[in-house]
Image (cartoon, rainbow, N blue to C red; front, side, top):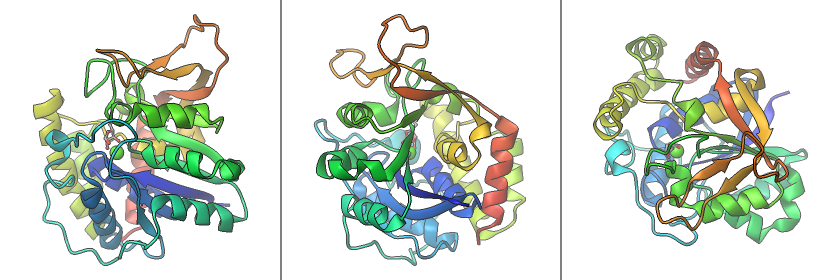
Length: 310
Ligand code: RIB
Ligand code: CA
């Protein structure tokens, strides 16, 4: 049976592929999309979610905007990677789907209430919406199967030497969700930097031959160009769909149970994810953290999902 999923995202080039994988893979039942300020302003990330769902022919999946800023800190969009509109590169077709009138927290509430089973939340941006939901509806957490988050890292960061962008944007939200007791899986840069957008990958996606693939190739090429300039990586890592892939095919991603803590106060390390893989702190494990990915299996899954779209 397909797994019910809510996807919380900040499209964002790699978020677009996360949406397409969630919508196109037969093992996922994409019930709702919520958007958050992150790669771009909430206005841009919500508009972009509408664009990439409409373009792919994804219908019947409500899209609700959530938080336009982090819980405590100021939003600092990743324009250097995603562009001024958070989906730089291709000319954006007019969206064919309207945003849902509910807020993200209301849509998550209603999706959980109507699911009749536990729902997995996949988050590929800052965790602000999920933290707001935890704080607003603590009595509904039992309706969430787990939170699977693309964020953090067992190693270095990408927005500061030690912090990954999603966590750095809203570390307080990450700490709230992690501390809520919800089953929590983190897929960090240490894994997503293994799924690199090589020329062969671009060719494979392009060869799918539909509208989604053609638009996706433009996104990949733009993302690679900015990643080279901003990160010194000519082949960018397609971070976010790895979180969806873990839900769709758990065997594709290796995880370990370990201790995860979020640094909130460091002058140089705010937003860092402290992953105590050696158990040095002797604190009880509180998360599953990804340590590996079947790269070929991941690309094949994504290719097949895009093939199932328009
Ligand atoms: O650090 C990578 C993460 O930050 C990805 O989710 C990307 O979309 C950006 O949001
Ligand atoms: Ca993202």
